[in-house]
Length: 307
Image 1 (cartoon, helix red, strand yellow):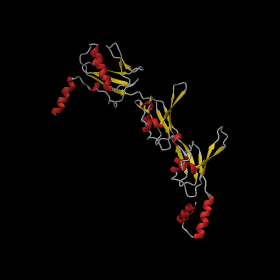
Image 2 (spheres, rainbow, N blue to C red):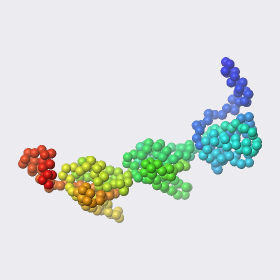
Image 3 (cartoon, helix red, strand yellow):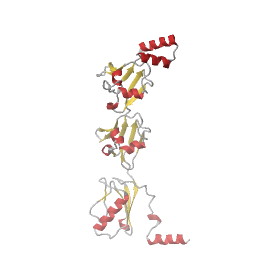
């Protein structure tokens, strides 16, 4: 009872009435243009008001000649700016200012799609960075390509910006971690693939994350290596330029590359690397196995020693 009475006395002393209590305030975020803010100055009811931040990001208050910058500031920073302005104008000696946000002017939606774990469209209350937007989408998938495309519209036409994934994530380059202002479409294309078939242990399709880092030896390593009887020569099948649909066949001296007598050969997206069978050696092995009754391991060792 005593505590309740004390609270009532305090409420009366500072002039609080039920009619003056504002609705619950929203969680604090940086203030931007068109946000609705509640400015309260203790002991100065004539200066207390709800006002909307102007399109220039500033607030205009009575008795002050200049505007108070609010865009990009947290509520407590705006409180200090208002107090400093009243003190500088010698209107108030030591004002106690409270700034809360009654309504955030939501930015246009940002969408993140493509090679991300959970494609998402969200309405940011505050400006977000490219990395934050990708994090909201659950991050990149293993098939994500080497670039991220950010499209914006200026009303008359669309502008697309390309951001390298390695610079954004691996190098953590802040210059490519763009600030999204709302209305952007973030697309993460899947990486191109190279296809490995023939005499390898695990044939398959492998993403090309970096064209300069995708070579014959590296993709063979991804297939867990060559299978027995693999030929010393491989072939790359690559689409011919011009859109005719034809393919060029490029021979590769695999043995020479593996013996480091020739440089490794780079591969491009959509290349097919085919490693044929040394059919002559397989046939010889089959005959010897039947004649001698050796197991596969023993006969293989015999052939290679003889060779």
